[in-house]
Length: 131
Image (cartoon, rainbow, N blue to C red; front, side, top):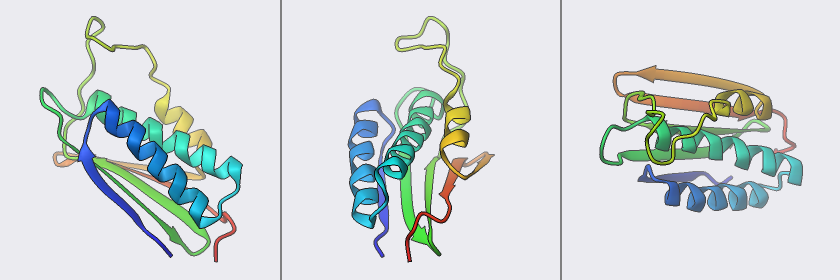
C-alpha cells in the first residue's frame, strides 16, 4: 500500500495543496466518502495549527506522513517549532481555538507529542475497511 510523505513550508498556501493531496490519497486507498472528508478536515486543522502556532518569525518546515496499517489509517502532522500563541491584534488572528477538539471528534485516536524539537500530532482512523 502507498505511503504519503510531504515536507513543505508551514504556510497557508501549502495547507491547501496538502489537503488536496491527502484527500486524493485517501480516495485512492478506497476509503468511503465520509472517512475521506473526516480525514481531510482533521489533517487540515492539524496543519493550520502548525501554521498558526509552531514558528516565530519565518516559516519553518511542516511534515505530513500518512500510511495504512492493519486495516487502519495513520496520519502524523509534525513541525520543528515551539508553541506560540497568536496575539489578538496580529494579521489573520482568530478566536478559533477548537481545532484539537474537532480533530479528536473526527479521528478514532489522537496523540500529541510536544517537546523542544517540535510537535507531532498522530491521528488514527481504525478499521476503515483496508486489508
